Image (tube, rainbow, N blue to C red):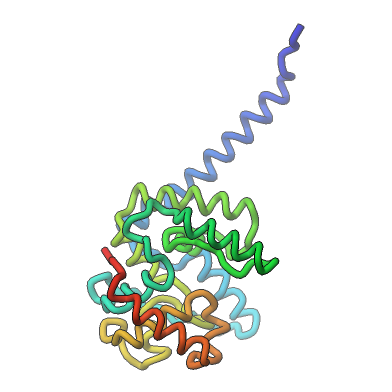
Length: 232
């Protein structure tokens, strides 16, 4: 004869699922808000600012919001070509890219590729931490689904280009264009855009030697692929 679960167990499970719903609702609320309102500071930016202020209490981030229409189409093409060439077609996840990343990591015996789409990277930057845990990846997947369901591709790319890290304390296309080329993001040439795009996987490391042989080669590769990149 089956005995009913103890009342305390039912209450505990009920409370747990209620907390999960509240937590996910908090994330969903921000995703809905940012569909129309530009983010002030993201979770990722907040963490980087805290790290900078540990060294210098007066430190500030370099960041200036720029509307989608005022960002060079060259930069849009370069970033899509470098980071997520199926961006306009997928629904948040590039399963083929993920499989290739897994195979590459297994071959190297360590994590050398991630396979994350622009949508996944944006989900992490907006609301999560850079820590690579199973829980964070799960949250990232849920937020990615919400972004794809509630925003259009143009909004996803607009916000991404404005909040992504491009160097130590440097966030967004406008600050990056000023930092590396002393020009605005609207005036970037194709080669300048490609050079910015190749910094994205590890901007704080690559900014120390932005014209290394490796990055020069990557820049030429992205330049060749930009003509085929579809952007919203």
